[in-house]
Image 1: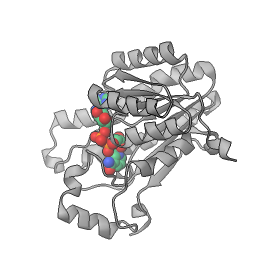
Image 2: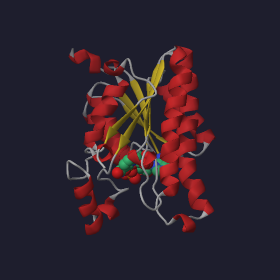
Image 3: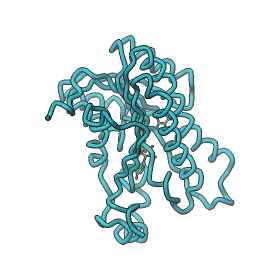
Image 4: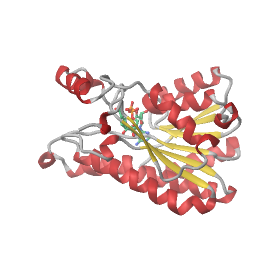
Length: 254
Ligand code: NAD
């Protein structure tokens, strides 16, 4: 039964894999046998993460990419194919959060959040998907958020981008099933990363998390990795277009 989670010799691109949730997923996939492409805008952290993956006995390369730029995404795909000859798994994870009252969101901030969190996911899925279609196989995992299902306060652009990621997941899952490409999403709740550091340092926010989340705490990046391993492996062979919430129970209660 254990082998249904096996990822030996699979090749995974993880965008935003340098740190946080992306890093935990990259290490998780590597632990189950995958070789990893860390695709990130931050080279220094990406190289450190690649080093940690190599220590596990897997291969890892770093590709500097801004996921809003199609040309750089095409280069990421070319470099991966040159190095590993194939792509089995794409984890769309690179994302940003900007908060403000809706009346104060600048057009530039709205565009940036949408460009990275939604258009970036689509462009990466499209470029990698074209390679997967040729091989008639592949798994795409989109890191959405529970903010794509219920609104977080003062986060209209972020919430909208993550809602879009969920519909993108359903759309690609529907259209690419015929190519044997499965597309699923993970929707985390509040997880301790650089993105949430300032919020979690705020006593009021932390109290709100403790009250609203049945498990009464924020999650750790490692607690997202298991679902990514599951979605990347045969264990999830009857899933596509689906979303897994990992939120300590937050979205299950009123
Ligand atoms: P993080 O800030 O720790 O990591 C984000 C990574 O993305 C960094 O390595 C960063 O360099 C990279 N990145 C940012 N812009 C990029 C770009 N244009 N091109 C390429 N790489 C870029 O954040 P995190 O909390 O690990 O978030 C990862 C994903 O998880 C995001 O999509 C986020 O929306 C989602 N998420 C996070 C939480 C949370 O509570 N932390 C909850 C739900 C969803």
